[in-house]
Image (cartoon, rainbow, N blue to C red; front, side, top):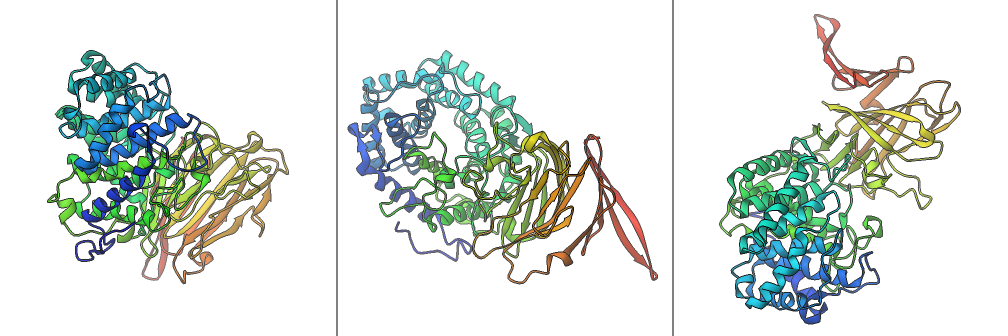
Length: 588
């Protein structure tokens, strides 16, 4: 991909400007053009993979997702190509939109693109084409959605059809129904779960916030925009901390092949005026993510986005992933809707949170603890509140980061960041027990039905991971694993309580405590981990943690939760005394 020279004056951290985003969009749109079929209605991208929806649906996906990039780019020549494809598609080429079918997803992308480019595309179509297109889209108004972010696809279609005066009452009902549905999944502080349960991932930004906020903005509905925009702004205060200094987004959750779609909420906040982030920081984070992927094999020799994270990688794919699925990344070009003279394009880049200083950030809604270090720009996510409906390495591991990838347990590899009870690494039924200054806690079901109550405490790059195992047969083997580091990184895991040098142990007759010291760092010469923190078990349900710089923390496990007491140490006139800094209680 040919991009303009870096501009280090305006963008000292990434070198990218609006011109780079425009060039990237142009290159991606040009690369897919040879794969158009059926009059441009389908884009059959090469490869031997077909999604579970089939080749026809995959071809529609290729049209719809690349159309989004064209809509944000607003190049009239390219949009004419898609106008011709639309006319062909609604003339008995595209599959019908049915209950819980993939065309419902793609209909939302098409409707959003048409709404954004109405004067350039829709208004120039023949009336017959408009009628057929509206009729095809209208099936989305009544199609049953999966109970998750899919509920917003009829909202997005309804917003467009209502605007053009087609089926206004059915459109209104679809909008109200979908917006009402997501209220059930809003958990506060700017966070949604993607349907029932506790599924926290990138769908927060590129779906749960995107569709309602854009709908309110396009409809000029001040009341709705105040509601959804306020939630977005709160979300961004946390979300900005999920990017490493190298531009990498957090490697957690599903659909990671959408890559720089992770920039969507950043642009959305700037576009609608609902963001706490300075314009220069917004562009720095977004451009950092785009550059991160473009420099690491996201685009192949044909200029096509590959199915993977860096290059091709089947580990990040799902059954619904087809050849064109990565083009959900087109949403990342949302920022091109901002005019050339907007501050997000004209102000100098500012450092992101991971570059400014070390930070420990408690996110109460998902019950996550973020741990970032400015020396290496690494961000770590300690997960004590997110899981999928089944055991999934991308949702249920103890920790994730911007520089590591979960190790699958299905290929005889040892899973990372796990408590393996009786040879089983599963972690289900996660019950959040709280998160606070430098700590997070939860309880989950492990192998054989054992219950594990875990606490992580962090400072700098160091971690203390403590796990109380209950309900396992005496003598059940327990193994603790840590980070799976890549080249250039250092991962450490040291036994502290209940574990041998091989990081294994056995349960006793009752509750058994297992504690390890962990660290993931890119620093060249870190202080030895054992000099950074020490621990002492006081019985089977109490642990004292002593940081070399900072207070002692006493952790106590009760029947229903965990309590932590921070104890400072003051020295005065040659004497030393303890001063309680208060107790944080969870579960009591």
